[in-house]
Length: 209
Image (tube, rainbow, N blue to C red; front, side, top):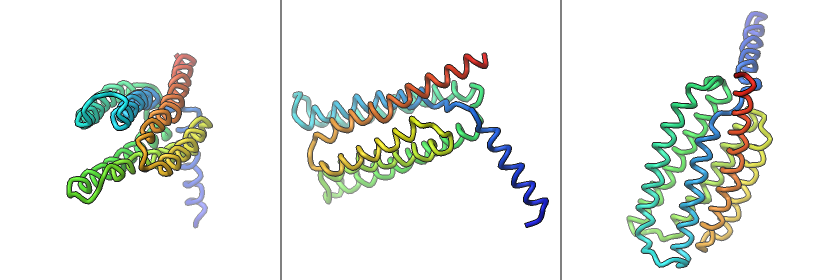
């Protein structure tokens, strides 16, 4: 490696550090929205599967479709607002956005596989339950990557908590109580950290306003 290449690499690394340094993560509002939606729908699914409420299980399909539609529209609206905020194009925020896009892609893949498995008559409710296991595990990985890049302690904690919930759900995979656990897990691992990140972003915006 020549001296010029070394200097170029150092300059590139320095620019990346400056671009990401002290830039707050802006995805808090989107994460908060998904956390609230997920907490509600997982709680609803538990009440139905555990027969705590007298509502036909078929309504779950409608509920999950509504969850996806509302979440998709909300992400689009909030995403456009975030794109106009200072720091939206920082390395931290670009990586965070891409990591979560890949996470969604992975979960959709697992959901499609589970639906096909059940449709072809090979699976049962347990197959569908595994989606929750993958979701928490994938979320833990996504949080861990963003936490390492942005040096956000709260995300390291959320990552660890996500892995713990994934293990607990897997342990109780045959029991409808996993959806109650999932609802609690969504509140702890999604709502709480994103409330904190949102507050940090507002503070940073006020300081530079």
